[in-house]
Length: 287
Ligand code: PPS
Figure 1 (cartoon, protein in one colour):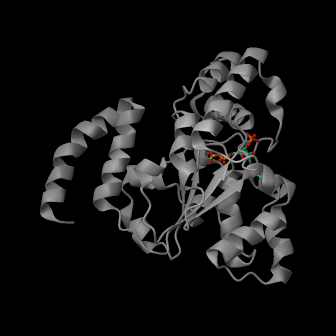
Figure 2 (cartoon, helix red, strand yellow):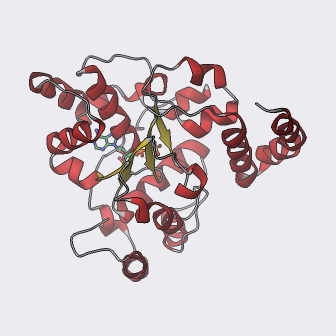
């Protein structure tokens, strides 16, 4: 790193790190600072870009198994596919340097924050908003042991208020790039419907030569039942030295929207219609 950069980092890090202890924004700026100043990208880098709870871990597992022909074993998925922001936050740059290429990063950064190089490849995964919001509720309840009840939480998310950031802002940042040459957009619902088809699509995009006879093992390891059986390999709490009572791979469903209050469904539908219009989505493009 050049010395002016180093100086800037040293001057800015203590106040931002202090803020990061108390505020989400502080934490985000600290990650961003380290990303811009210290991260050394490689052209082979692959990012799995998602709003939280949209199928990130599932896609991580799919990539890990596609690259290994279904033979990969690990104690925790983060060993094979680290959470980018978390590694930046912890300043584990040695770990990043030692990872073999292609590195498979999970990230929840917006497009504007990540500003991925054209050399890197991105698998952008989206999930139905209702199911994402419900999954966020269970996640935050599990992670922070917060005691917000379901309805006010969903009401807030529908308005774009969440400690993860607004779902709409996230979609507004990434969706315009869904057809970029280095981006592949994959829907959670399509993975549920036909995982084999999506696995082949991802493999073709990344140029992974997967022998057809390995596909059954790959798909078995990426099935909900297999991942649920091996829940501790995926639970983020175990990377934070916390206990895990299980249930990170929770339900894996689609269409839980009946749990929404009517007024929340109506408001969300209005917001989605506006978002679709603003993004100029075609009839066939559904998120
Ligand atoms: S995180 O914490 O942001 O990384 O969470 P993320 O992995 O994006 O999302 C977790 C939800 O994905 C479900 N999941 C699966 N669904 C179907 N099949 C498989 N194999 C699978 N693996 C994970 C997981 O159960 C979470 O959804 P919910 O609705 O909470 O069950």
